[in-house]
Image (tube, rainbow over all chains, first blue to last red; front, side, top):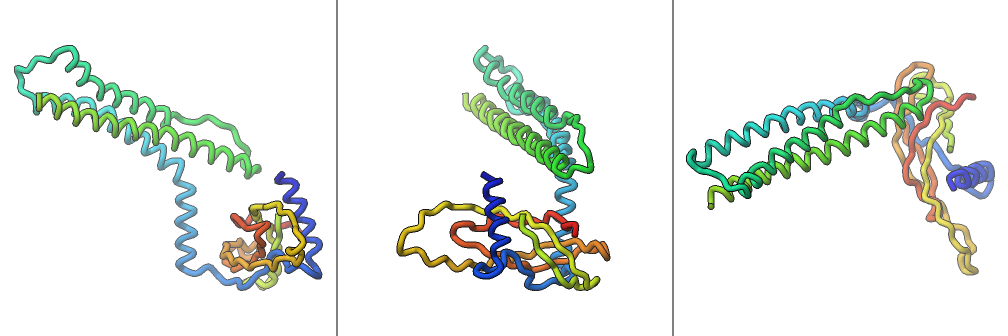
Length: 166
Length: 84
């Protein structure tokens, strides 16, 4: 389909001498304006740093997810009365969110895991493919991880509120 | 692939031909009797950054591409310099 379109386009380009307008024209060319130069540099930086930024984020979230578990238990100890004994159901309820934090941590570890890939710098398509694949995989892990982390937080808050009310 | 010739660069004053990757949405239409007159193509302007091989500096150029309802433009990327 794409090939057909390209062929059609080439045919159009060849036949545009008389009745069809030219496909591409230059209206003006000038040195990059300061604003556009800044935007261009920003885009370059964003493209260069996007893989390391998402990896750093995964690293940060591993620490945060791990730290959330002792904070949660510390908060429970602080909020609930010391002589309170839990039933089995209450214990199960209280242990859901640490498990969710653990799962989110595992997801972030998968996102942080170094990707082994071989690519040739001569082949732009190969670099592009690898770059996009890495980004999309890491995006998937960070999205799932962050959803689980928020879910764990929400569960913790709800569990504490529930136990206080009871 | 569409090509564009920038005849006079702002600094090097040379002519360079670039390859553009233009993605278009093609629509296949059935021509009916009262629509035999061809549609006038619309102009669309894009500002893109082009690297100058002589001075090794990037420049911006406003390019005009044409589209009709059959082949509307989705995106325009500068692929690079076309070897002449």
